[in-house]
Amino acid sequence: MSAAPKLVARRYRVSGRVQGVGYRYFAYHWASQLQVTGYVRNLSDGGVDVYAIGTLGQLEQFKQKLLQGPMMARVTHMDESSASVDPDYKQFCVEGG
Image 1 (cartoon, rainbow, N blue to C red):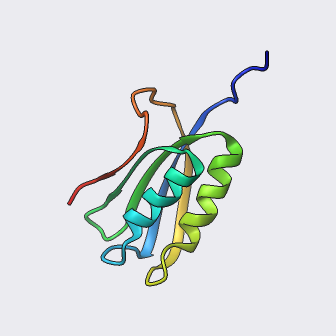
Image 2: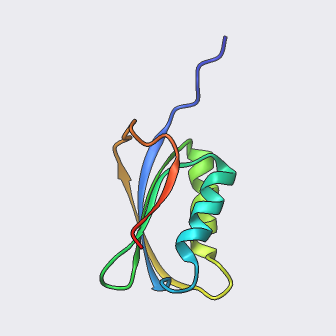
Image 3: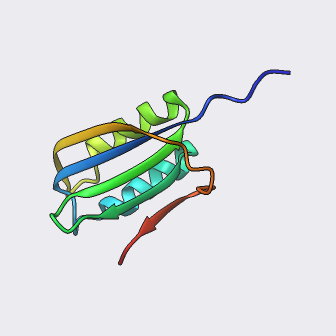
């Protein structure tokens, strides 16, 4: 019996034209496709905050999608940091209005 893959968590702080362009729902779509859990939310400064839990491989693919963004978005900067895995997140959700 093989061990379950090790889960890790990352925080991504995304800047650029990332609000009002469907960015959060784009992130939700790809998180669902890649089986990543966590959340995405808008920040008051115009950026987007993403908390993601998955394997290193899943998170690398997810990060590439976040850097790409939806068609109308323009990502100009992304900060990535390690985070602790919160087991309460069983799925990925869009937070905020």
